[in-house]
Image (tube, helix red, strand yellow):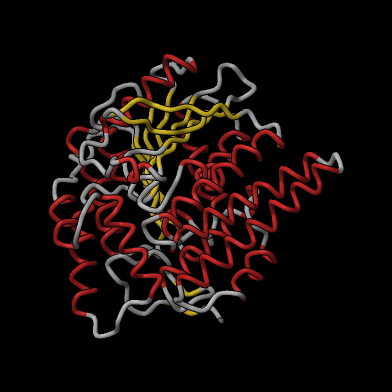
Length: 392
């Protein structure tokens, strides 16, 4: 499908144009799969081959195509391992991870989702070992359960630590491909973690929390006690709904030297309400992929219906008046008007004396939500800002 420019922005729009699929949810996560390629995910030819096996809007064909490709990459990795080609095996294994990660995007709540997450976790752990990447997996006690994550030790023992938190459609492992690997290569130690409602934590009864600063603080406690992270030498990056989580933490935890959000999202309930209203009035029935996305969103929030979802998320609000830490706000021009308005208002209203706002247009190739179409630019903007903060 040829590229086309979006004419009217939806409240939950995340791309400024159509890339491959007419279904907007499917198109977004296909671009995400492409965006992970430079960091070790699927290469262009692989992603487009998988896309050729998918029927636009059909969730089952998406899950099947990506899952089957993950299996094929695992077989390839095993074959190369048997030949002593460990690096090639690790590269194939990381692509297996990326395939399984994309597969569960439209699996819907239940056993299939869980089984694909099990496969993606196994492939990720194996890939880290085969590629000799400095990953230490950890679990953070929280609310009687565990928040999983991974810490990547930079070779420089004095490297600042960056904690990266994702959003509604995320797991800590995919954050390695989104930005973590680039941060590590640019001189930072990197921590990636799931908050309640991320990854597979919702299956364990952990759901999105308005007071996101609490699980984030628990993660920082572990980074300090186990990995030697130093308060004042820690940065926080929040992506998508993580822009809300990071905005909350920015006003409550003084251990961060700086906070970065793409995009700042201080009032998610506003967009959630507008999106639910628009879908309710639409004359066109939702695609299978859109229905699956909606089901997973409810699951992550611990909600039983759209109305329950809105009630559970109504108190997700971050106060700009509490924020004095140096703060970088990043916005893609293809994002929805709701994201844009909240990002601009946040930047204007926070009390930080050191703050910056970056708007990335279509010419940058990074105008999508969380720079989904140009992950390198996200890393460049983040590290450029942090290098100044930490005097690197």
